[in-house]
Image (cartoon, rainbow, N blue to C red; front, side, top):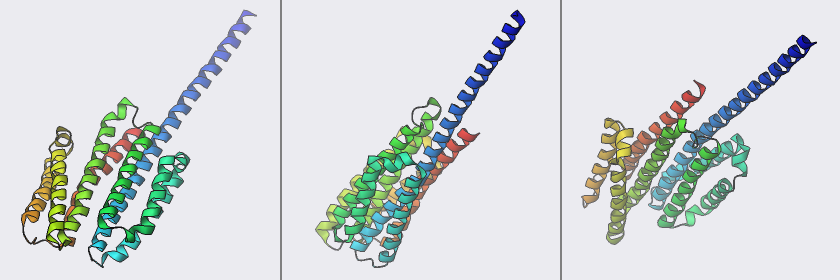
Length: 274
């Protein structure tokens, strides 16, 4: 009788232990999938961010009379819509998120009436949209567990910094296009002062302790060279660099930053699946 009771107790205990372990592993697997989805959304979001930044720069170029940007603008406008649909399809939580819906509405309005806006207003509207998108990335990271785990805090800090740095270079790219195409002295003087303010902020970011630790010496040199070369161009009565040549130099600088962001995402992915 006692042996039967003991056997039953052991059996029940084993079943409960197995059920508990199954629950633990299931919760761990769900958390892992949630983290991986967060990474996927951030990677897709970075692509969207890049296309909106390019649309901002190309819009400024169009306002400045560079007709070659018209076709590129149409391509970028279509690509942004595709990017947004892709992100919405990845995650039901994101599709229903009020901030995300506000971003998509903002883009729909901006792309519809963009040609009617003055360059200053277009720059402002694009930049506000980009700031909102970067803030949404942080909400995505928090919701999917990338921001509340000690294991990923170092990566959390790094990729956020890269997004902010990339946007600072992106703003300099758009403002620089205005400067290089401005024909009115007073207008150009005002634009040069604004761009120099952005360059000072960019230089301060690059020389901060955080970026000195994160960026390689080669990357720091390349980005600081971009700042130095642009300042030299701004000091000239007649810059000797074409507007599209400048646009490409700025794009190369942005690419340096976003390559580091992409590397952070790949490293984080490896840590999750390894």
